[in-house]
Length: 404
Image (cartoon, rainbow, N blue to C red; front, top):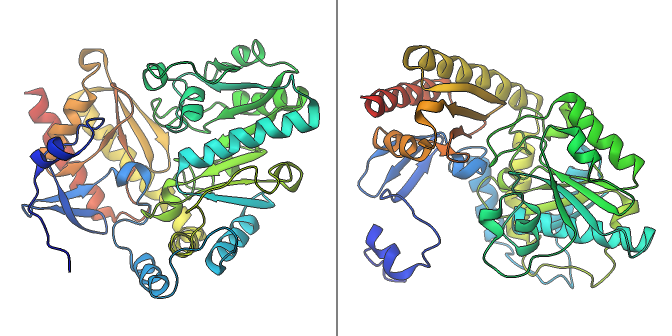
């Protein structure tokens, strides 16, 4: 058995590449919506690993699937297939618009596959001039060079040399800005059906349906990045289901594995056929261990009772946040959908979201940020009401201390 080395926060600075700046807290155990650190301090988790642990920590369905598959088969090369991957793909197809599934290890990889597929579809169906991709400012689609360039945040894509070409950025919720960019050279429009990293911004009905119509008019594919919004996060299995708009390609990850790394791209037969044998791949994507855990997560989330519960828990979150704000007047807006919620700091506290996050952690509640001005909440989809109320009590104490 391997020797367990004694480590602490200073070990990170000694051994890790410095692209992260983690807090001093080192969690070592989680159960449901609660986490304990190495000093046995307890936290209520409203962060969910950035909307990943959709069923909380160590949900028995996922633990059982992991143990069961872990004793059978972990990995195969793609010269073969495996039963968990085929079962999960079949269930995803049955539950969505899609006919075909491609598995990856992450949301960034799923988006990379979607972008490559869109380009290849356009090349083979419409010719070499149809290469333009339209995305949105403040969007986020992953950290590969292609996806980070499509993401509309230059801070993430600058500094690495020449970027992939023919990528343009419109304004979210501004249909005229899309009209100004789209043409017969556009192969795809890539959009989050609710902007996550960009500040928890919902699309208007006119905007999202207008984007779909513009894609149809210009023979362009509509790609929905549902890495953060999918698998029940907004109260439907996927966000497109509540919007009256069906994409041509959809990407999903984060909650798909409930904490185990997996991503997927789903699409139609007519589009999928353009990823012919050898045109794209992933060594570990779709491995039996990941797919077995994801199948358990997918089955657990995809029930009317759980999805309805997300919408009810959202109401409680909104009620508590609005009550806190009535007392302390720190937020200009509470927005979001389902259990992806953003509290926007007002002008007086603009740019201070990270400070509030750290203060909240000191009080025993974990939250996120979405940019410098928005405190983000992405808890377990089954977070108990008791944990919501206790967590909000702690969050209010943190706000009061921050303002004092």
